[in-house]
Length: 106
Image 1 (cartoon, rainbow, N blue to C red):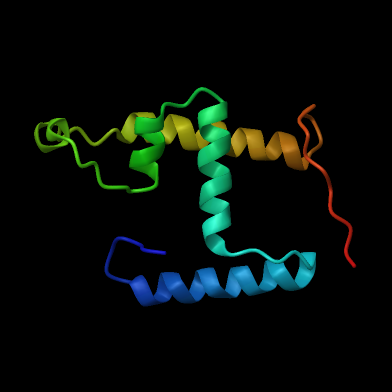
Image 2: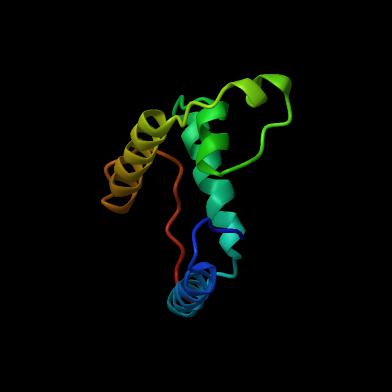
């Protein structure tokens, strides 16, 4: 998992600690990449374009247009992440009729 910025080691340690704590408390086996995959899948299912999701995930575009398009997509990314945060709150507060299943600790 990559992070931009100068404190990559600090970010990795924080992610590792959070991952360990969540696995211990939930008893669900997962890797941090699963969270990226889940967020990306849900955002596209909510109507957020794959281009914006790609920008959020910091994936490199390989087509020629990407060479010329230097727009940051900051507003679109903020809107998408706010929408995803709102969706997570609805899921956690059981306000959604989605097919989310609560897992019981073993």
